Length: 190
Length: 433
Image (cartoon, helix red, strand yellow):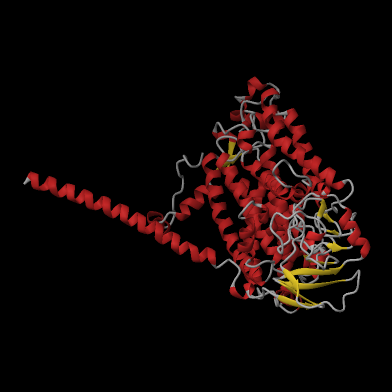
């Protein structure tokens, strides 16, 4: 009788251990898989992602003028730069730049931030840029600041005529989105 | 103190005894707010805990009512708030109570926190009490920030853009976290919806932490202006009527000032740009947060240069969050065994310099980031850090404290001229009653 009882206890102990570990494991996996939808629902939804491309007619933009369009909820400035602005952009030495990388989605990610690399080939006078300060997302004011480019009123970042950060707390040059001139007068952003 | 104390509650009626045997909530209330012993020398700086509880209740009350008239949709939000102001019966009053109430909530919490710093309320055994308070303060900041976004004015929108932008400074996962917070590539309708949901949720979480805060308070007992622990029964008075009356009087005075702001200058602490509907394509000429965030905003803007591998953006965000983290560890930064600044001549001086520094940072935070202001912000931020990381630890080691009374009772009697000789003071309480 006593031998029988001892055997029962051993069996019960194993069963309890097994149940304990199995329940714990299934519980953890279950909790993690339930947590994911709760996190995932916060990501940009399908309607937000759908606004991925815009086409813009730039035939009316004269030298020294710019146009702002909304792309993915952000403003994209399309600026036909003056010869003076272009010249100022070209004369800057790379060593004077706070961020020496082009940040141009049309180029490799390590391309240097020369003036030409901030545009696409043959359209160097056109600057197409996400007009959002890389500091905390304000919209800088154009044709202002010490470098004749952009000045961010929020925290005082200053950009040059090619939208490169020169002074202030912003860490990076303003982003150049993927874009191409589909004809002489039409730009497709995105 | 009361945690260890024997309950003196005796239910008088049959129903009282019936409830007491089953769920002794009346006993808990009686022990916590009637018989609970408080130090006899509490001054008006100690009334802000009660005032804060009142403000939390007021904010929840007005907020629940405002939510009945508000539309959390980026096309409708701005107009629905105007509708509350013009069409809803007494809507203007309820909204101004809520918006001005947020400011007064922060006025009260800052006095409450500075009182804690002045009298050393955070020292053992009240470290957890202090940390719970810091958590409440963080939750308050999150709630206030999200509430400010709801009217969907220009400042709402750009404030949300800037503050969610903090998270994009985190290396590698920053952009993903930012998109998770705002539900898109820029602040928009999804952002407004989730902020409304969370703005409604967080006050109840605050209420939960407040319960823990009061629980911790009632285990350790209240501090007092002398910083000396309660030693005998003559050191304390019962919560009712003494503290109830004092708290009540302070609340009424506070509410008078609050009412003056609501009725005469309801927008004094607000910003004119928030009367313009949010425009994602145009940043206002200057962005400033609500006044209660200005010192931290100045610290954020103070870092305009890269520090080694840390770029200026991440640096600013780290320094700003760090300035709040410092508050959490104050109990371990202050090495002095003396609690109250009353007996610490040097700490008292540096405390007031610290207040001046924070006020200066607040003033700089409201100014445009040009000229001398970035430099002032940097100096202010350095002093802020030095106060916690250098002055607090070093002062405790080198400062000679003033002579301290033996007990709260002795301190009170000395102040009232009841006894000129400290030696005789121990006997004084019995004779003076």
